[in-house]
Amino acid sequence: MGGEGVAGLGYQELRTSLCWVTGGTRPLPFLSWVLPAVPAPAMGLELYLDLLSQPCRAVYIFAKKNSIPFELRTVDLLKGQNHSDDFVQVNPLRKVPALKDGDFTLAESVAILLYLARKYEAPDHWYPQDLQARARVDEYLSWQHTALRTSCTRTMWQKMMFPIFLGQRVPPETLANTLAELDRCLQLLEDKFLKDQDFLAGPHMSVADLVAITELMHPVSAGCDIFKSRPKLAAWRQRVEAAVGEDLFREAHAVLMKAKDLPPADTAMKERLKPLAQLFLYA
Amino acid sequence: MGEHLNPEFLKVNPAGKVPALRDGDFLLAKSCKYQTEAHRYPPELQAHTRVDECLAWQHTATQQPATNIHLCECLLPHFSQQPMDATQVEQLLGKLTPALGHLDQELLAARPFLASGQVSLEDLMAFTELMQPSPVGCNLFRDWPQLAAWWARVEAALGPELVQKAHRHVLQSQDPQEAQWDPQMAQKLAQLVKEQLR
Image 1 (cartoon, each protein chain N blue to C red):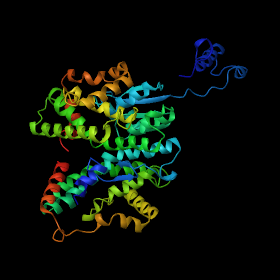
Image 2: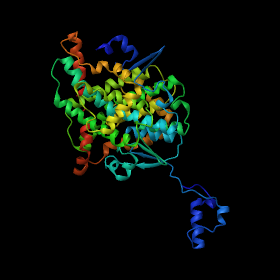
Image 3: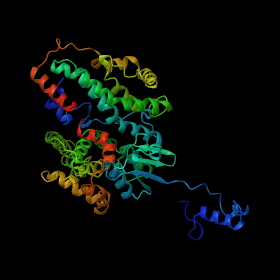
Image 4: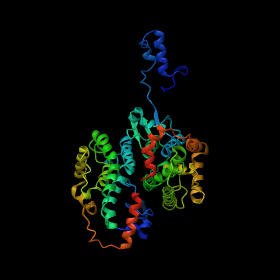
């Protein structure tokens, strides 16, 4: 923070050290001629993320892939850190991901992705300028909220988090309905969006693919091999992983893939997660 | 009624949902940003992003619960010819309450419209979604004065005639006795609605 100044010291540190030398709280007046008036160090971009969450992974991958400098602020959902006073100042909706860019705070992963793409002038393919190509990306981003997101979250929780982490039985019929709904969404993903294209919105990778792949890793982490019987989708996955870079992809999914090894939740945690858990079990 | 399941429509949108758009050979579903005037979707980055934020939030916060209320109080009784399940409607209204609170206390406390000082795409989306629970006399805004005032502003901005025209199917009461139903289609639609409400 504060930028590089003399001999590796930031300007702020240099001014502070000069104050120490003079015994005062302000540097000698003439030094203002030498050292420009330095504004208070601006807080750079902060991303509030829990990589257990699908939309957080999409934002993380996008920022890293595009070399966008940011401070990672981890918000542990299972520990309820999204309800802390500090975090509520950033996002009163108490959800991740969230962004703070100076005084500008922002919620909603789709809005965050588009903001980053525009502000940091990410390559056009991520969110194309061309009207119809962009509309294709928008179309996917709109559809997925109440379709793939819901079924992927429910699958992961009902197959893994409920039995292993919360020690709660999920009725077989409930899980069966959830898996059937997931299957229906995956079929739509292939038939309506991917079709015979290389990527979801056309020949090039976009934010739509990033949002989708991070969703699909959720049921994968719970042992649901959704790509096994879907060669078209499996081939798309390979292309997306290759485009992102395998190291970055693995890094972004490390927390998720270790979720099955989480120690069981204690009583206090179970109580705190009850409302969220109800959401993932029932409509 | 059921036309969204016809093969012709499914070619436009395989998801079987409305809205959908055909512009020459270009087919599009669900996106609300295809082409619009600048103030509805402002060009400045932060103002633009605020609209994006609201549009993303509304899918699960208002659209889904408001749609479910409409399905439960209007369409399901219509298709199944059974009385409305008042308990289920109450439960569904409860799911919409946090969003109404957020709109009233957070967004509209700061400005006259949801994303900025002018009516935007987000106001249009929220307005049409929140119209859905109206037909059975749901006074959604009873506890939310800012929302009620916003509603009047949006209706004035859009024009009351256009609002009435766009909502005539939602607002007019439909007597099941008058409907000319294909009983098989009615049964299929009732089943689809029940699955959505599960």
